[in-house]
Length: 478
View 1 (cartoon, one colour):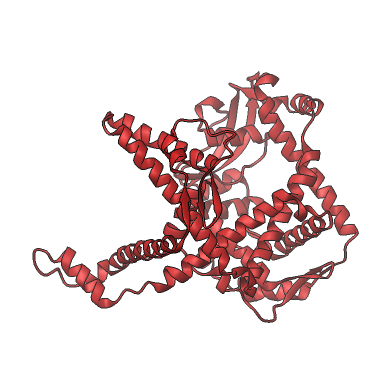
View 2: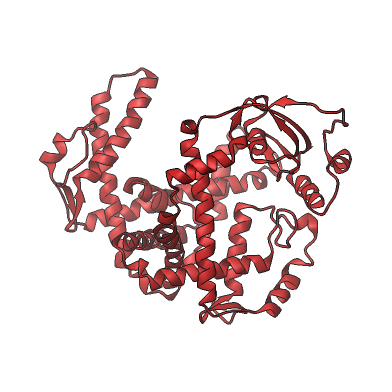
């Protein structure tokens, strides 16, 4: 993301549902596990569960179909803690690239907190303002129907809030600019061409309180904006004013870069990094970055497949790489995903596919013998799953358009093998992922052997009972 995008999404436009750096929980937490003396507590588990439910809100943490087990989740967190500790041991956090990533995160969080203090926390919308807006925009031609105000109150509040956000942000930035020492290389600025190649430019276009704005930053952002604006002009078939647009665009890009530099300087000047809650959130981010760094720098290089491995995998799985083959399969169809997950759970517990399908599937064709279908006639998502399945296997729940399906492959025949050269890039991903998973598991197994790990089984059981065993199923996906 360019600096321009970062500024306007974070400082001016980004909605803040809450100040996470102000909400760090303090106090004694139940320790669920210890990894080489470092604890994993209930708060960490709750944060993980919230993240999972944010991405997959229908997952139930009770071990059901499509669900998760608390004990399995804690094991994953133990693995992550081991990778993080190994990252520190190998000093992966000392590399310039890692430090740059962490510095960028600190800057971003500082800007978010600055915006919270100078914009969000200062927004106040009173009832009189809401009523005034309502009368002006909803009662132009006479009194509005009874109850209309309450119906549109939230919409009005949101609109007024957005306007005040922009007003406060613009005012704050204007104050920064008024006090700043801004020096622009005007001759260089006038000579800039939006279509010019930006590679290798080491000059400085401006300085803000002594800090440079590199020319290549200006050219990169200018080129991106110009290309977008040029497409709009071509689509509208209006070429008049193109030169004026170039000049205004140059000024706008430079203004935004200056504004970003001012906001960044002010955010870092406030030393949020000294605040305990801020320190904690940066520490958590550093730990997550270290886990990713461990995978990328230690495991991934070893997992890059060789040409021999690719060829061998291709030969051993040639049946999976055919086109134009025919399949014989059965499927269950559902509208609510919850019904599909419930059916999958019954299948995993031993229910017969045909019998269950006749009872719960929204569309079910009775058995009529072998019906072979060319796989190319099926939707991409179903075709992808059939490519993966072996005869007799049952798929997971498949999102196919507006429907959710479960498929059982009964037979597969015919088809022509796809040439190796046409599959090489795909094979690199497939074989690489398998090799990566195997190597990571082996590395983690060795780390576990040499580590002191204690799991509080009693606490896990109590949490399971306390939070999940009594949740009504109809509310479990909320």
